[in-house]
Every structure is written in structure tokens, then in C-alpha cells.
Image 1: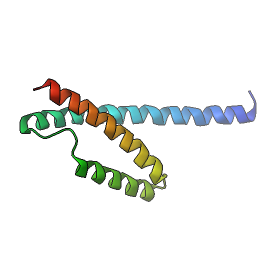
Image 2: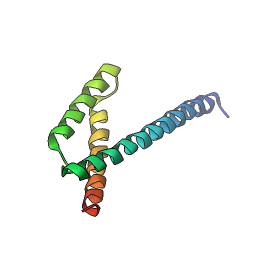
Image 3: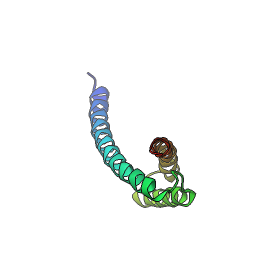
Image 4: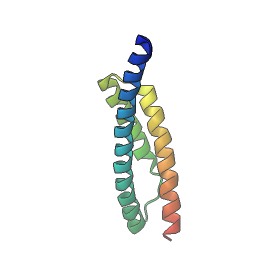
Length: 97
């Protein structure tokens, strides 16, 4: 293995470790989403609350800027995740009726 390949392997291992942490955080987030679904079911709130989507997108952009991450990437990732979660919530809310 060349020096470059060895260095890449070390960096890839670090990326894999970070990815594992991200997946753990996604699992924790989804546990909270399930609690949100229970509240929305009890209170009759819809899956999509547009003001909340924009609030999260704005907060994530600002946090990304503060931490030195590309704000456009953070917003893109979060908007896609929020779209998926809203569909997930909507499906479960409809099933609960």
C-alpha cells in the first residue's frame, strides 16, 4: 500500500466513524419524532407545519456557518430529511385515524 493509499485509508476510517455517529444521532432523532407523532395525533396537528420547517432550515444554516460547514449543504440535507420525516409522520397520522 502506498503512502497516499495509507493516508486515504486512515481518513476513510475517520469518515466511517463520523458516519456511525451520525446514524446514532438519526436514530435518537427518530425516537423523538415518534413522540411528536403521538402529540400530533392527540392534538390533531398536521404532519407539515411550514413555519417549523423554515425555523429549522434557518437555524441549521446559521449553525453550519458558525461551525465552518457549508450552510447550503446543511440546509439541503435537512430539507431532504424534513421532507422524509413529514411523509413518515403523515403516513402514521393517517394510520392512527
